[in-house]
Image (cartoon, rainbow, N blue to C red):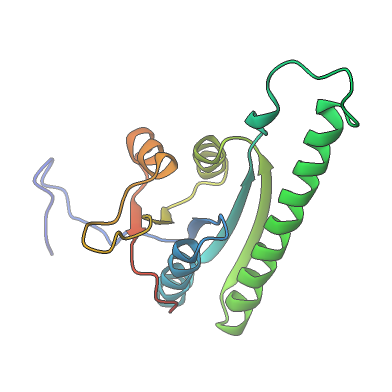
Length: 168
């Protein structure tokens, strides 16, 4: 049996009971979900789909006296629409998981994407995070988005990045 260099104790196979896939409706997120479902099938894991609704930063600033709606009303409308989009995306993920025989948990949170991922992963003892890497430029590498970079910097949980937009 292989041994660890750190302490010479036997290395045991890692358990992947729970896999987190943040979804933001981009094709990279869909591809990440496909990879997560494949892994979940191999390890009999549960996939957790997470959609984060971020606060509307466009609404910062003073309100106009002649505005038809207040900032709070507009923020509420925007949040409801984003939650509707998140619900639809997670429903599609749940359908894909079910068709593959994979257990699926869904969650919508109001927070920055990176913070929602980190908090959810910690609260739910997530074993792996699978995230889309970003759009590939025509003749260049895929870019790393701010949320992915933040998660990579602040978690000790293994993170699988997926740059292939092909749906598995």
